[in-house]
Image (cartoon, rainbow, N blue to C red; front, side, top):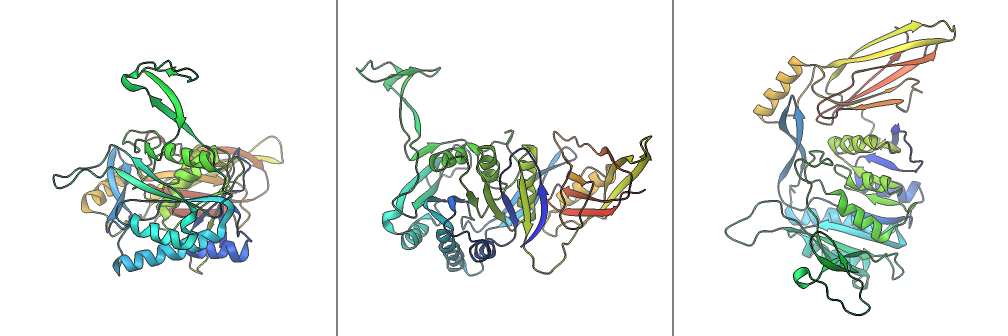
Amino acid sequence: MTLEEEITGDLALDSALYYGDNLKLMKFLLENRDMKGRIKLIYIDPPFFSKSSYDAVVRVDGKNIKHPAYDDKWQNGMYDYLKQLTSRLILMRELLADDGMIWLHLDWHVVHYARVIMDEIFGESRFVNEIIWTYKSGGSSKKRFARKHDNILVYSKTSKYKFSVLQEKSYNRQFKPYRFKGVREYRDEVGWYTMVNMKDVWQIDMVGRTSAERTGYATQKPEQLLERIIEACTEPGDLCADFFCGSGTLPAVAARMRRPFIACDQGRLAIESTLGRLCSQNSRVSVFREDDGAETHESFDIDLRIASEELLAADKKLLKIELLGIKAHRLPGKMDKTARSTVKSAAKKDPLALVEAWSIDFDFDGRVHRPDQVFIRTKDKLQSSWEKIVPAGGSIISVKVVDVMGNVAYYRGESES
């Protein structure tokens, strides 16, 4: 693994985001970072063996377009799927702390097989819960009852796992007061209720199309779900991990709840979506990528304007950087014709239309991009210029640009115009 980028923020936590194969990462953590038994919470939301391809919905020129996110297809079917899942769960058990818990998020496709595998790896006696997460969104069928829930298998490593009982509202019959002696009752806009220990069926809405937390990434999970999981089995400072982080819900929630985290995904769009969420909440994270000896493929060129202005103080200058746009954009082969046409038209009309985020490191050390400023598109608006007073001598600047599809390109050069 090699360090690629570090984002600074208010949270002084030792968190890391990895771009690469999670199997290689876990072996690296065990063999090179002495991480055995160090992680208090592992939550994973792997592919569900749905045999489908998933798209992310991104916004371009006021229109929604679909961009390939990941495939959940397996050349040798169920055998391949269960083999890769089993090998990863074995390593996760090694990484899990003795008082830690692992939460495996699946659905009806393979959860019955996964339960048997988890019993074998962790032991039948280490089963804690099967959480049923039920929701309203999604399709229905005339051939069966609507499938409106996911399954989350919860296991511990030992009998001494950390767990905090959470409570929830239990509404009285007909929403009227019971007035039982010694029973504390409450009332809200719905009616009278008592507080009881939380049950294993959770009603939490999926991330809606207009939700503020929506990234457009396929199969994104709601922050409320992860908040509940993190609160139940960790305390501030406990290390959490998600080795299939997708759009980055666990990293975003963990950082906000002051838990350091390890997150990993092998999709560039997933990594940049996660990084964008962390930047928007000013969270600190170091980003690593798998070092396979190959140079990063850049799918576009950056068009910049850099100028400097001498100040009265001889040892200072005003450095101005303006992002003019991106050009020579190469689109993915799997993108449909309508989306390709929309992207090309938008780029021709506005060279900044495809830019999702960009950042500037005014004093690049030649190895790690440590941005002084990060700009993220919000409500279809993007700040495209920045200026800073810097030492008068020459320095190397690094500019990173991310497009709406998660592609990345860098400019590195002298600050002198």
